[in-house]
Amino acid sequence: MARDKMTYDSYERDIFDNPPKGPVGVHRGSRPLMARLAPFLVVMLIAALAGVGAWLFVSGEYKVILGQSTSQSETASDANSADSKDSSNTSANGSSNSTKKDSSSSDAKDSSSDSTQSDSTNSTNSTDQNTQQPEQTSTVNKATQVLVVNATGIQGYAGQRSDVLQTSGYTSVTAANPDGTLTMPTYTVVWYQNETDKATAEDVANTLGIATVEQAQGLAVPITVVLLN
Image (cartoon, rainbow, N blue to C red; front, side, top):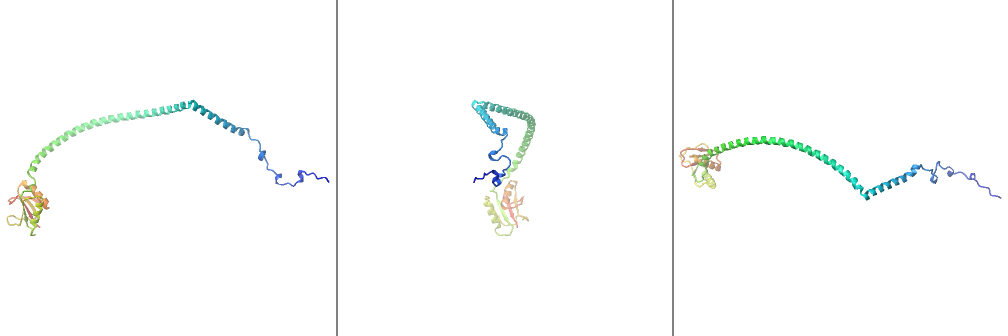
């Protein structure tokens, strides 16, 4: 029996009998002309730029181009610096003129102040010469006789204070009790008889911590210290 002839319709239809619309895989449609030429154009442009760069490097023309741009920038910077120098010179001239005026006025003030200072110095020197004479006649003399009178009632107190004076350098110090020859004051005091003994009396008072120093007449010794409570 002859085999039945199989045709397309003899097979049951499946998913492969319904392909998607449009070209798929190797059956894609053709692309536009510009899309196909774009890669070639890019390659040619890059090749041209590379050739120009190589020619500039080999021929040394790139130095000329760079030199022109550098000279232009230097010219611009020189112009700016020149403008700044002119402005600074103008301000400097103005300030120098004002400085000259100030210096001239200050010179006049200095000359007047110098004359004033010289006058004051002369007057001060004359005053010092006048005051030096009494100062020279009143100096501390630790060899001067000093009598320390104990009117406190504390036994041995005059001797203690005499030792303080001797420790400070006084060489003629005597301790005693009141004997009726002196009129006792009501406060502790250092008496001196002559004006030349004033500085010594003040030094004795400072050494013993006594605040009152007075001149008195009829003293048995040049300086008398009266100690009271």
